[in-house]
Length: 58
Image (tube, rainbow, N blue to C red; front, side, top):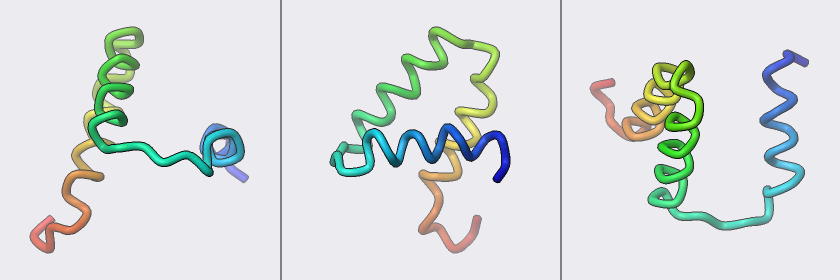
């Protein structure tokens, strides 16, 4: 297991049964980058990747 997988596994374990909207997720990502601006690039890359999952050109 990679170190970074621990957070993903914790998220699944603690909140895996919840349903959220993408608007809620976007708000949480924005709040996170407001608090931790040093992670803005990584969060933006993740958000862009998620937004374009169904786009065959990307």
